[in-house]
Image (cartoon, rainbow, N blue to C red; front, top):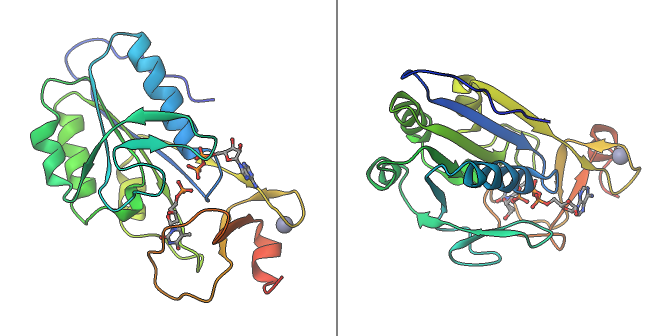
Length: 190
Ligand SMILES: Nc1ncnc2c1ncn2[C@@H]1O[C@H](COP(=O)(O)OP(=O)(O)O)[C@@H](O)[C@H]1O
Ligand SMILES: Cc1cn([C@H]2C[C@H](O)[C@@H](COP(=O)(O)O)O2)c(=O)[nH]c1=O
Ligand SMILES: [Zn+2]
């Protein structure tokens, strides 16, 4: 389990990345860390990409329907304007953000802000997803989570797409995706 570092003095600020497949618990882990930051009376702003309206337009919602209010944004630079005077910034679905997000996270950390980012590390093809590799390279702390493979019960790192759609971005839930381990993923079709 991730334990928050306790850094004294002025030079605080760091980047945490939570990654893994769909259903691996990324959003739950993000919510857990934000809840603890709230208990510590830290000021925070939470963001998600405007396109992610699967469950709710404003809230971040986990697959188990735990939720927190967030600000949907279309451009990662908006975070630099909106995250004034805060101690913590939370960002969900980072894979959907533009190329500037790693730079934005760097700038926030330089301001002394704790930045907690969650995102899919691989797309349905098993390829690195968008800006996630760049973000992982800049992260001070990385947590890789795993789902349970729906085929065999082993740990799952892959998000298998059950439909024939070929576009990289396709919002969906269990109707479209299932978590699979490496062996079951490459054994497709089911
Ligand atoms: N195959 C699965 N493996 C693990 N968790 C699953 C699976 N299918 C459904 N879940 C549920 O999904 C929850 C994780 O949801 P969430 O935090 O939203 O994941 P993520 O953000 O990584 O997609 C788990 O606590 C569990 O209840
Ligand atoms: C693999 C994959 C996923 N997506 C979409 C599907 C969901 O809407 C989100 C991931 O949400 P989660 O919180 O990680 O469950 O991303 C996509 O657009 N393209 C893909 O290849
Ligand atoms: Zn498997």
